[in-house]
Image (cartoon, rainbow, N blue to C red; front, side):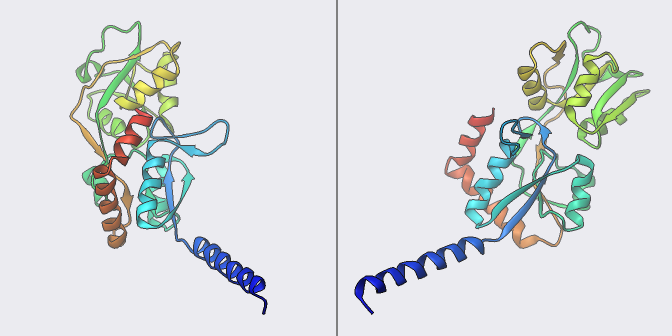
Length: 245
């Protein structure tokens, strides 16, 4: 065999091995509900899911050796899809709660948030939770805003599939107020400056977001927690924060 032909054969084999290695990279299926800006949303130009949670999971995937594939679905279907094995991880700005922790394992907290109340700009009577008694409150279904609203005496809860729907109904006077995460309210109002809405600032105890996994996936949980610690230590987490907040 001529030297040139031999070199070409070796290069061809190396490329084939590299391609096989790339193709063999395991896939981590990540579920989200892409209306929770800036944590996840759909890019209007590319139709891809983007956001803080997306970049966070991609950084984790780089460390633990997984290709990350996002699946956009309804909020109420995320935990059932996880338990059924349709997805492997939930990354959707999900608050760590005792009830949820009974059915899923949460990663170490990756984001600290707080709830706020959103009302119309011309509403000067609602200043806190106590002012929501006997009022109509718009919430995203099965979120912490929904859970808090359930504790308010006489409240009529209007539940919607997405956070923007809840806020739009406040703007249209179909509800007196919405209870929602402050970062989401701030981003929505910044993107919709003509909306007749305002938020009341932080009005509740802080809550923590976690990535949700199946109870049996303990090894994957350990890998994800180790990766979260690494990206916090090496500055990657702060870079993602600076990009989206």
